[in-house]
Image (cartoon, rainbow, N blue to C red):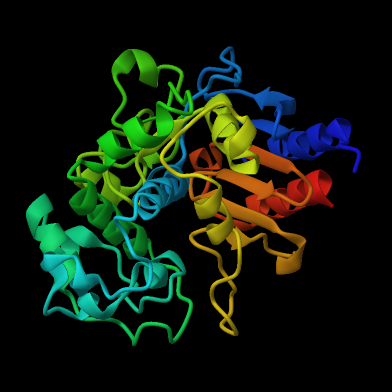
Length: 347
């Protein structure tokens, strides 16, 4: 399939004109590296002389679930420290005797665990991290495990806690030492960012308390409540780092990098694990909306306006990073652009 970069630029330019986002960066590549990329728009409409750049940092929001949690769980699985299909209470004392003890890691990775859908941690458990952890791990289930596919941020939060328990390291340290550093993802880190680094970060939503758009501080309230580091969100990254991550996923054997997860975890994850349940899901990755799962195009999105796709059959990956939350929480305009972008890249 021939890639039409002109049509990609035209599509993303229309998003600029329609105020879907202030700016965007994008890239498409294969197992050998980035084949095409572009930048358009500005970092911040309040500073029109500062353009989007390839090294612009983005609050990647729920992409944290993939580049930190999914990857770290893969490390532990390949280390044989985490059985996906054993009840959690078989090896995690914190959940023994509690409803979550009868859930498996695979349930959490496929959003079939039946954990509560509510995510307002402060209202439920207060502001102390230990109280939040205890509340999340000990609360009753919303429904029996395996009964339905229901997306909830709690799945990633719980898996982040599990990764910390099994590794003996905080999630940010585990992700940094076992995933990001080995892949050369030198610009990826959890926030809040230091002032000099935050200067090249794309701002997101207006903060009601300060009257200033968040910049270098996670938009996600749970991440801010927990000091910037949690399984739900909180990571910041740039185009080249995410490209390195996706490139490795296409062909770990030839990348020259050795993070703790490898081809076995990637193959396990980029496959349907939800049987007859809808919507179908892999392990945190999901078949791209509007595609047949057999087409093998998998995606993960971030609420702030980020997204990345991978298709091993086509030997192609793509990333589209925007700060659409600067303007609006309305999802549909960016959804339309994402779907059109995916069609241009993968057909």
